[in-house]
Image (cartoon, rainbow, N blue to C red):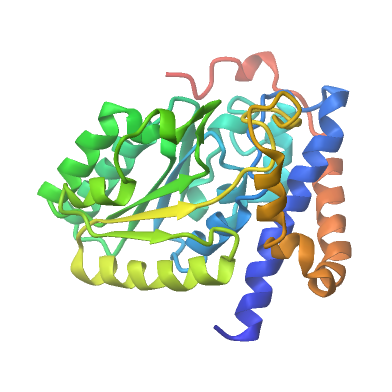
Length: 308
C-alpha cells in the first residue's frame, strides 16, 4: 500500500480515537444525552473495512458504531449534535449513540439489540441481487452476536441464495462481561464454513493497513462472484463495555492484555504521525462540539416525527 494510503488510514483512525477521547472528557458534564459504547482500541477495524467500500455500498452495524459512522464518511458535526440530543443531529436527536445512521454515505443503521441488524443486511443484499445492483452489503457485529439464532439463520439464507453480503465479526473476546471461552465451544471461522461461506481470520486487528489490504481482496471477490463472505477480526476494546471508564480495577479483565495490545497500537506508538495530525483533528472536533453546543433542542412539533 502506498504511503499516502497509509497516511489516510492512520489519520482516519486517529480521528476516531480523538473524537471518542473528547466524548470521555465531555461525558461527566451530562451534555451527552446518551449511553456510549466506545470503540477505542478497535478503530483500525472500522477504517480498514470502510476504506475499500464505495459510497453506494451499505454498512449495518452495532451499538458500538461511532467508528463506522466516521469511517464511512458520516458528518462529525451532526454526529456530535446527535450525542447531545439536538435537533441538528444526524437522526434529529432521537437516536443517540446506539442508533446512529447516515444513509447518504451508506451507514444504514445501528441497533442496541444484539444481532438485530444482521438480517437487515441480508435483506438489503437480497434486494441488491434482485435489482441487479453493483452493491455490496456489510454486516458488522461482535462475537456475542454469534450466540443469537438470527445470526445462524442469516448466514444460512445468504449462502443458500448466494447474496453479496460480507459478515464481519469484530471479535474483542467479550459479550458484555462474558468471555467467549465461557460461551462458545467452536471456532468462529470454522462455524461459518459449515454454512459454506468462505471465511477469513485477521489476527492483527490493530493494523489498519493489513485489515484494509485483506478486506479489499474480499470486497473484490464478493463484487465479482456476488456471493457471501465471512471475516473474523481479532481486536481489543480498551474501555468498559458501556461508558467512559474501564473494567480492569474490578478484575473482570487482565490489565496485562491491555498493555500487550497497546504495545502494538500505532495510535499510541507512531509519535511522528500523531504529532502531524493531532492539531488538525483537534480543530475539527472543537468545531463539532461548538456546533452541538449552539444547536437547538427538538421542539414539540418534532416529538412524533420519524416515529412509526
